[in-house]
Image (cartoon, rainbow, N blue to C red; front, side):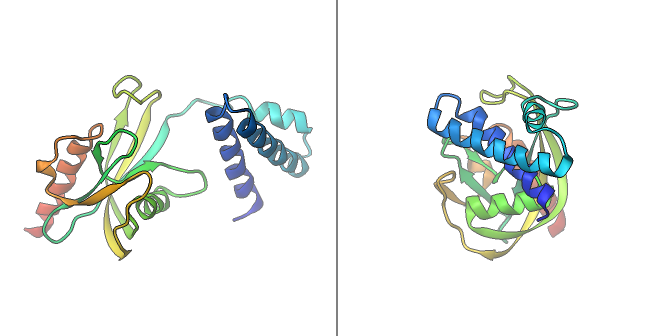
Length: 198
């Protein structure tokens, strides 16, 4: 990773930490320190004043853009799809999450699958792009685009995580407690899986 990529990742971590730790003075102080350390290195690279860099970090530059998420469908030979039960709401979903900076969509999805399921996957073709608007689902507060891929397992073993305490391959038509529109996504991927078998 080059220095600019490292600084961009540190900046993203610092700003996200500041946003989610506004009422925690100890973590807020740590993320503030990380932001200033990052700004100091940016200043050295660009020749700009430190406070000018910090001020720039604290405001949006350019257009406000949607969040980006990634999601993947993995099937076993019997046509069952890999699902995870989310710890935050207890609902069933296809594995995935928000994309992080300095990674391609495919790299982000492979990371999410590894973290949430213990599986190593090859990320294949893009199936669809889904949009969630603020207010459409209880926890969506800004527009989110989710890139939905089909994946193939290449290693690892099914392993629960703190985000996904239950997981496995299921007949998706028997699942009722779905997260957001993940039933629609599973239907779409299953139709493609069936077409491949013909």
